Image (cartoon, rainbow, N blue to C red; front, side, top):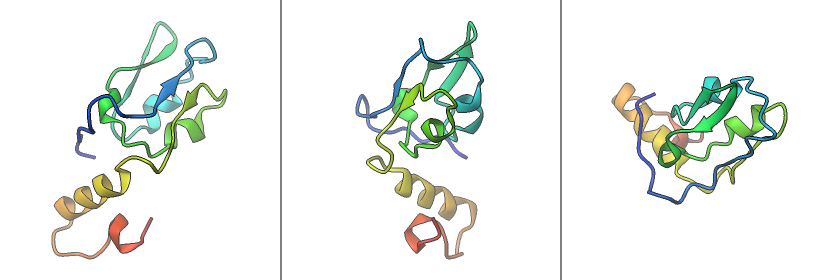
Length: 98
């Protein structure tokens, strides 16, 4: 997915590095490449790119991530991505596919 910037310093994403076991699931699943694994721990490297979809927190096996999923602009980002990728086709978050 094309990287989109979110509004600066408003993402609700929080990481508890003490609790993190460095499994890399967050870095693997994040569509915005918000995370990087350094020194066997996750690190938030692009907080403003977080679209608050909640995939990272839902897939963290040790609950090291917190995010208020649904309060961000995930729907808008997904819809814009869909329109750019499939011009003229109906679909995306605005059409109720998600």
